[in-house]
Structures are given as structure tokens and as C-alpha cells.
Amino acid sequence: MLITRRLEFDAGHRIPDHKSQCRHLHGHRYALEITLAGDVIRRDGDAANGMVMDFSEVKALAKQHLVDVWDHAFLVYAGDAPVLGFLQSMPDHKTVVLDCVPTAENLVQKAFQILDAAYRDTYGNHLRLQQVRLYETPNCWADAVRP
Image (tube, rainbow, N blue to C red; front, side, top):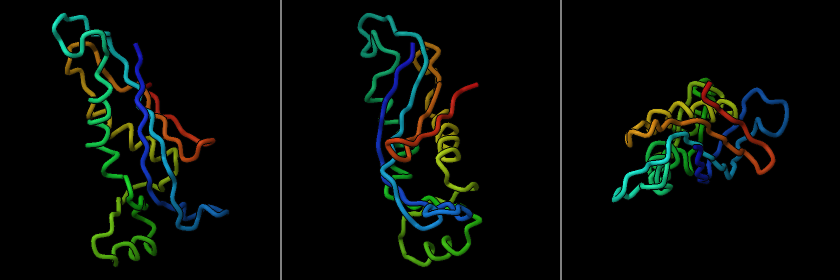
């Protein structure tokens, strides 16, 4: 069985080597879809009876491990020295330094790595992260899928 939870957050970034507007500092309203695979829990008296995982718990783990970290932050590549220096000059600025250029493709791979560790088979129902989809705009997204 597959279940999916969608969350949204705002973040800034830039693609330093891009040939168009994306090389400039800008932001997006990102949407994140987290798809989990697992067996439906069948235990009378269990709060998760009939579920793969309670959607509120899917949300809580995603917020704790990723969304609250990236929301209203500037996602910057460690090799983007001019922007990194600028951001670090602002006291208490929320900056997330990445080891990759913050494209949708790279961000969704990072998100998958972070969230994969958060969703484990804690219910005995073979729970696992199956896919993460990251919308950069309503019409553009990237998927990271478990091989």
C-alpha cells in the first residue's frame, strides 16, 4: 500500500551557473510530497489500525527533519562563495549550506536522504520511504524514487 502526504514551505536559492534568471537570488513556494510504502496495520485497539501510518505522524516527522529546517531559509551551495559570504554577514540569517547546487533535482535527492532515515519500520508493517516529489513551481518538479 502507498500513502502520500503533501507539505509546503518557502525558501530562497539561486543556481550560480544558470544562463537565465535563476542565477539571481529568488525564492519559491515549494511543495513536498512524501510517499510511504507499507502494509496496512491490522490490530484492534491500535490507534493506527487500518492505516499504513497516521498522516499526522507523517507530517510531524517531515516537519521535524526537513520542512522546519528549510522553511524560510536560503538554500545555498557551499561553493557559491559570494552569496555564502553575503548571507553569513547577516546576523541570525536562516541559511542552509548544501554540498550541491540547490536545483530541484539535487534538493529532492537531499530530501529523500534526510527523510529516509526518519521513516522506519516502527510499526512492524514494512514501512519505508518510497518516493519524494519536490515541486519548485506548480508546473515543475523532480522525483527521488527508491530503486
